[in-house]
Image (tube, rainbow, N blue to C red; front, side):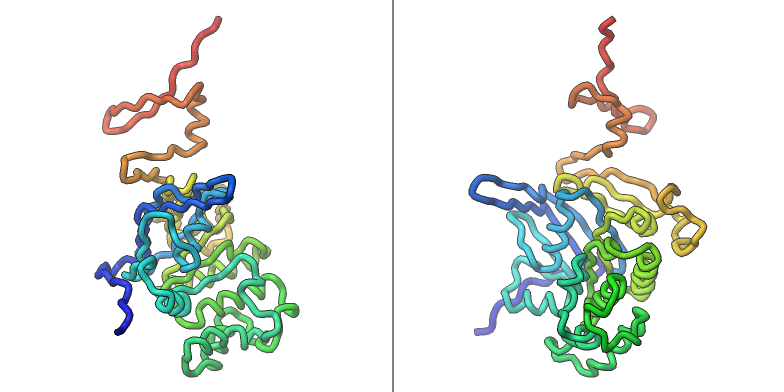
Length: 308
């Protein structure tokens, strides 16, 4: 009998839909709650950045989308497929054909005993694609490294390795490109080159999800999703006046207020107030007063007691 296929839904504009993702890592002595009911939708054709402190859950979430980890609870749909209802064979095909992954550690992106050209051809060899060499050379041209086609990993700089990694991730024309800190170990000029490359790919319709600590890069992205304590806490959206100016060198992306920030309500109508705003309240405990006035919700802390 043929194996059952993982169900497909008809949500044609949605690439990623996460609903109530929970992930608990257990050891003999402890439990770590990495995700606490994370909800997120990514539309097809979006270029989205995920930001958050170490331990916030962003890499766990990225690994789930990449088919490398499974949740303790919740659901995750990618390109209309229920990722956690896939058979092992379907999951292998999904990782080969639907997603491309650029790792922060270049040692996971390339096999050191193969040349750059052979590394890019490898995913196509596994999928049985035709015209593999031509496609690999096309990708080398795209990342500006056609002259490095015969170079092995130890002959390439860190930035060149990362550009080859992007070419490898794109080899099988994935519907979703995942990048874990793609500019984390390169200089600023290479970081700009990589971001420009992502921008061009996105203009051609490529859906891209990036995990990054690079604030300059994240301030250029049209949608930035912040993860805190295992769930979405806020989103930042690039202001319209900056949307067409991402390549202008005279903008200091670290200092410019390029994005509007929105706090996200979860399904239980809870929200996480940004830490810098809580600091402004100078709270004496964990209680705040919430009121509605002039069309706005106001949050105020308890007044400081006068001990004089």
